[in-house]
Image 1: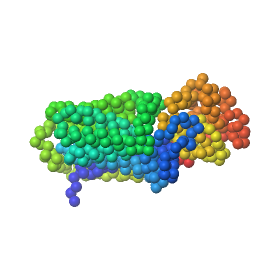
Image 2: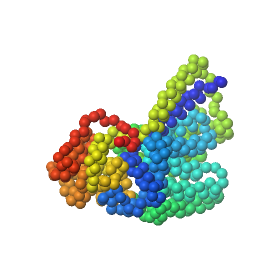
Image 3: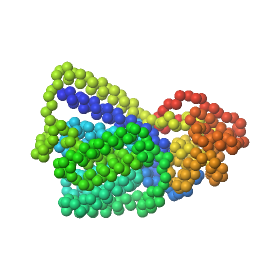
Image 4: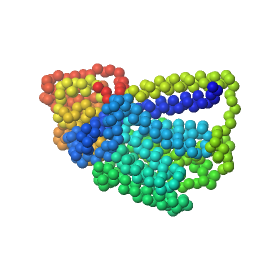
Length: 509
C-alpha cells in the first residue's frame, strides 16, 4: 500500500492535538460540581436551601445543575478518568462541528488542519479543565454552525430554541450566545439576506428567548442575571484582561487577531464582505482582550465565521471564484518527495504518534490537581480528629473542604460566589485575607470555630497575635483554632513535613 508521507504526518499531528485536548486539570470548583451533581441526582431535585455554608445570604440559583449532573454521572461511572473522558468527548464534539463546517469550504486540507489546530490552541485555556464552561464551547460552536449552515432557513434555525433551552441549564455562557445571536439578527434583518432567512431568524430568535425560560427557576434566572452582573471578579483569573495574565495569553490573542484580520482583508478584497460575521468576530476579539474567559469564543468564531477566507488567503496565489469547485474536489498537486525524504517523514511521524499516544493514555487516566491544593495529611488529621463547626476558609478551597468535610464542617465561602453569597460577603472575605485591620470585624460577624488559610496571607500573623493557635502547620496551609480549643486533646499541635510539592489526581486523598 503506497500511503503518501504527508498522510502519516497529518495523522501524527492529529495524535499530538488529541494529546493536548486530553490534558485535563482540576478547577478549584470541581469537587463542588461533582458533589452538587450527586446531590441532585440522588434527591431527584434541586435543593431548596444550601446546607454547606454557614454564611450564605442569597437563595441558591444553581444555573449549572445539568452540567454538574453530567459530571457526577461521569465520575460515578469511571472516577477521575470518567471526568477526563467526559471533557475529551465534549471538546471532540466541538471540534467535529468545526471540522464539518470547514469541510464544506473551498479550502485545501492543509488550511483545514491549520484552522483545527488554531481552534484547539485557542480554546485550550478553557478546555484544559473539567468544568461547566466546556459545555459552552460546544454550544457556541453549535450556535455558529446553525447560523452559518446550509439548507432551508426555518427548519435549520428552529434548532436555536432547543439549543438555548439546554444551554441555560448547563452554563452561564448562554448569555454570550444570546448576545451574539442578537447582534447577528440586528445586522441581518435590515440587510440583503433572503426573506426566508430573515423570517426564520426572527421566529427562532423570539423562541430562543422563550427557551431560556426552560429552567428550574424560570424568570428567576433572568432576575439572577440582573442582580449579579455587577459583582466584582477581581480575584477570578479568567475574568481578568489578557495583559494581566502574562505574555502567553497576549501572544495567543495576537495570533487569533492576526488570523481574523487576514480573513477580513481577504473578504474585503474579494467583495465578499459579510457584516454579521465580521461584526461578531470583531466584538468577541475586543471583548476577549478585556475578559480572558471570552478568548475561546473568539477562537471558535474566528475559525467558523472567517475560516473560508483565512484558508483562501493562506494560499500563495489568489484563487479566482471559478477555481473554488476544483479546490473542493481535491487538494493542489504536490510533487512526490524522494524515497529518503519520505522515509524520514514517516519515521518522524511514527515517533510523534508513539509519544502523542503515550501522552493521551497518561492524560486520560488522571485529572491533575494543582500544587496549590492543601496537604493530604492535613485532610486526614482533620477527619481523624472529627473536627466540627464553622470553618472560615480561603476562597479557592471552599468546595475542596465541602467534598472532604461536609456535613461536619460548614464553610464561610466557596466558589459558588454570587449563586450563594452576596457581593458584600465576598468583599469582606477579601478584606479579611489581605487587610488585617478588618480582622476583628470579620471575626465578630462570622464567628468561626476554625480557620484554614495559606500561611503567606497577611491575616495569618494577625490571627496568631489575636490568640488563634496554629493546630496544623504545613508548607501550603495552616489550620487555626481559638486558644484553649485547639484540638480535641486541647494541647497537641501537628507540623507537616516540608515535602516536595507535587500534583496529584482528582479527587485526592
